[in-house]
Length: 178
Image: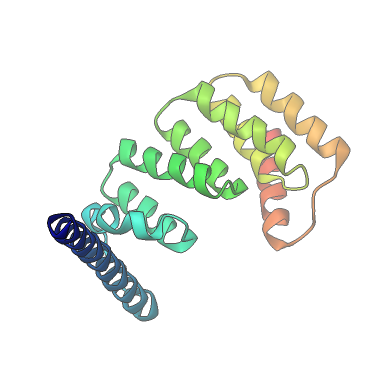
C-alpha cells in the first residue's frame, strides 16, 4: 500500500510539474507578445509565430501578424495553414477574404472563386467580395461573368455606404468600364 502511495505521489508530482512548465511557457509567450504589441515591434520570423501559435490561436491580431510573416517569407503553404486554422477557430469574413486572395495568388482559381462566392452570401452588404470575384473573373478570362456580376451588384445597390466601400465601388466601376 505504501508502494502505491509513492507511485501515485510521483505520478502526481510529474503531472504538476508538466502543468507548471506548460503554464510558465504560456505566461512567457503572453509577456513577450504583450511587449511586442505595445512597442509595435513585430517579428517577421515564422518560427516565432509557429512556436507560440498554440497559445494565441484565438488572438486575431497574433494570427494576422503570423499570416503577414508567412507572406513576407513567401511561405504560401504555411500561410494557407494559418488561414485555415483561423477559419476553424474564429470564422470571420475577413479570414475568408484573405484566404480567397491567397488562393488567387497561388492560382487556385476554383478555391478562390468558392471563397468569394461564399462571401457574397455571408456579407451581402459589402462590395469587396463582389469586386474580388469580378477581378478573379477578369484574371481567368471570364470577362462576361465579371460584367454580369458587376451589373447585378450595381442594380441591387445594397451596399453599406462608408468611405472604404465608396472607394471599392469606384474601383468596381473602373473595372466594369475597362
